Image 1 (cartoon, one colour):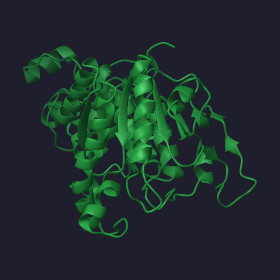
Image 2 (tube, helix red, strand yellow):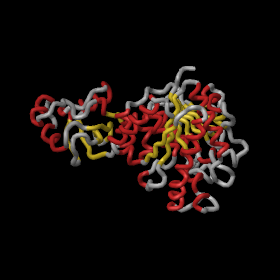
Image 3 (cartoon, rainbow, N blue to C red):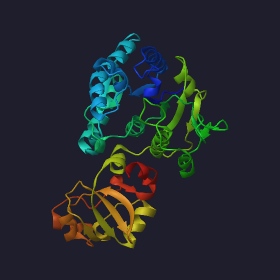
Image 4 (cartoon, rainbow, N blue to C red):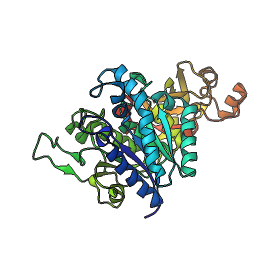
Length: 378
């Protein structure tokens, strides 16, 4: 099998015992399964939940805490224990692990987003296994991913992974909840995630120890697909389970066929993470050039500007009151007001700049390409 870049997401339900605490035997099995992927010459990035499960016993809680403060305190204790357990197990195979704790604002900030990418690329280059988790001990609700399902999808896109494997305690996606309906049918393969499939799934957690239910996994899978990453959602036992999944023998649902190439890193940041600072209204000619011919937006096509922003900001591009694109500008709003409707040569003279485009096509994302991400952004 050709070398692939694989993201493995392990949820809390696949790491915990019946009391909600960390199950070291399960962790050992996962580690050996990942080690076998590495030994098969694949690159592996691990997204692992389990910090709260690893830490709450040491804080004196009889069961998983339910308050935010309790969960964050347990995560603070448990994250070190979790990563130490992984590190010790990987070391038995002569493999090195590294820890990255991320929050939503790291992705919103363009510089930090690039730093995450550069760090991951260097770790993979050095044959290290990155272990990523949300920084639960400091994250606030407004700056969370919601669960590690979405985090795994976004990391998969960022590093241009070939495959995302989401391990859970349910063996795939069903048309009904198999715990409640005996006639529930599993989807063995899905070419994509449609709205009708999303509507079939209630927004509920899959287990008492996890934050992400099947709806969460569907939304994450939809996001991964839009970034060109194929997905598997399911369960597995034994140390060959990941190799079996890669060999098309997994116990779950395979999602994605004939995917488009991955977004480049810059367009991913614009699409998923950037904050919109303003709007630009454009004329028909500019709209046709952008939508039909893959062109950049030039000053000549700008009709009006709304909002106050600097060069480098992200704005929405509007034609006839419809958002058609989103992009990163080379001109400030003040400069754009001076140059709207002008040829690029005139615009560059007026602004003393050297960029003929208001938004270069490499930093312009067409709205129809962003539609699968809207459920996440809202």
